[in-house]
Each structure stands twice: as C-alpha cells, then as structure tokens.
Length: 200
Image (tube, rainbow, N blue to C red; front, side, top):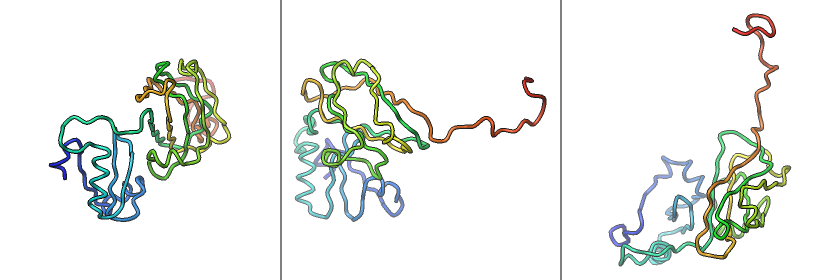
C-alpha cells in the first residue's frame, strides 16, 4: 500500500522488541494499525481487515491518486502531550496565541498510560476543563485546581476548538507553572570542610 498511498509513511514495529512503544500506544493485539498526524495519534484499527484498513487510510491520508491532499483531521482540534522526567506539581499556566485562531475550550488530562487520540480525548473525563477568552491568550495567568495536579508525570492538553470556530488552531507558547514534587533540601548536606559562612 505504500506505493499506492504516497501521502502516508508506513512503518512496521516489532512489539516484542519494542514493548514500551506498544504500551504507550495501547497496543493489546496484533495486527494493530495506528495513524499519526504531526506526531499525534489520531486513530487506530485492529485486525487484518484490509478493506477497513484501506478505508481508514483514505479517510486520513487521501485516496492515493494525488500528491496533494487536504487536512482530514477534525477542524480546530489539537492535542499537545508533555512528559516530565520527574513528578511535578502544577498550579497554573499561561497561553499565548492569536486572538481569533487561539484555543477556546480545553480539556486537561494527567498521567495517561498511553498517548491520547482524538476519540479518547473527546469522550474521556479530564481533571479540568477550561473555557478561555481572547484576553486569556495574552499570556495572563490561568489558575488550575491545584489539588488535582499533584504527582504529574505527563500532561495532555486537548484543544477542542478556537475562538472563531475556524479550521486551524494556533498556539504560540504554553508555559506551565509549578514545581518538582521532590526538591533538594540544603539542610540535608553535611559540611566537609571550613566553618559556617566561609567561602573558597
């Protein structure tokens, strides 16, 4: 199919050799076909039904007759996935985006065992939902429900739509404000030389 559908790149992954990739993407049976756009999982299908597989390819990547294909994703939708190398606490965020094409309704998901696709994000229960105004997109502080954002290892930001309802959502910058769960306590360090207050 790779020669027929030139708008798509086809990759085969051996889940025996790459178990972490299988777990991250929720692969529980073979064969499983997963569709990505811009490094974001947008769909998946299980089983060796070639007709169903080809229908999915046409849906997401075009009919294979032309190099040019329009974006088949859901208009305005965007998923941003952020992973941390240690547990963190988040109490607020800032978003900078154009007033008309910037995010409006947002769902926040934490500690997901695998990367969210659009279907899971639409139907899933987030830890918090936000409705942003154009003023919020100027980088103003947006407070979160702090008690719900403890011990975070990953954060998925699902942008459902934008301010104008257009097909393209744009984000210039997202800043997360918080702190690591475990911080260095300087009182735990023992002096090995010199006197208190001395510098070398």
